[in-house]
Image (cartoon, rainbow, N blue to C red):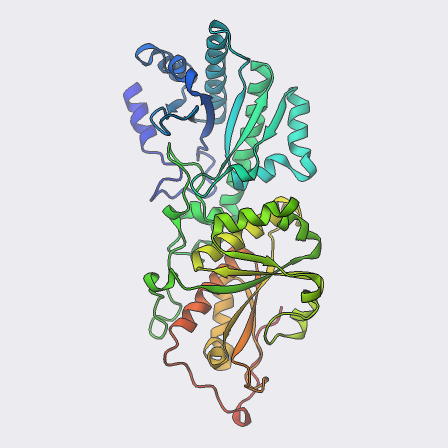
Length: 442
């Protein structure tokens, strides 16, 4: 019986390469990951594995101790798989073993350290800390969250530290895990409609706007495992895909417009947040000053877009496609986590990119067919000047893209793919012969 159960568990995957979680499947398990002091590992495992085997049998949860990871480190990760109740019971058993070991060796009181992906932390804390304060009040515990500055590009997990009695820490863990699990499932649900837009992208990477996978089975979280794949062209006969080897080092510039009220959250105390974005993404991220913003956006633009930008601040991002994905995603995530939109709504921003003016006709298409198809496939709103509405003296033209993160990313990738493949662009008609082409409005 035990062998059969273990075999069944092995077949389940949690963010591992090639795994595709079932959207909306309530049986999808979200593992509980905790940190324990290295000195406690021996007691948790027990002689010949007797203790951990007993915990597994009593709680019907699988417990993996990653004792061979991070050799020499003071703490080791433990991953617990199973349904919520079983995970909580196993965690409590581990805390009891640690408490007994601490008593036997005259060590300090045991604390619980829960690992959680950075993208979920904002919802654990809640707006103005309301969620974490409620959990502390209901469980009579003290809970702190590690700083975002403590994570790095190889590990995007934050540490939630819980202090209190064994019983109260277990209650707090159950509430924290329930919130993490709910947020995880909500992200899966909101990601589901977008799968058609990113056919080469793993669902677990799509779920995280920054493209970081959620905690996997015993391994570190890594962006590179599920980095955005080159998007297949909408028009295979005319638009070849971008060569990843060539695109990898191409520096792109994009402009995001964020609410003025959100500037402080993006920059952070003494610039801490924006420095983290720069470090993790590898992109240059600059928030325009109020004086610069009064001049409006770079390049040609529509009246509607300019009026909307008057209440916004421009953020300039320069970097590769990979860096753009990360940096823009972190901005979208920050606005969501800081409560700048209601919980049941998506963050929608305006993104601008510059394209050669000679390529505008190619992007719009005959009678606006291409831009309409772009909007249909990506779910974004795309605005360009109508053909013949400019004097033709500008080398570049601004494309306005409005939508949520995945929609704007899809539109950017596809438009840049069209531009990159434009060695033989569609000729722009002479102004005297052209008829204005209406692009869909917001």
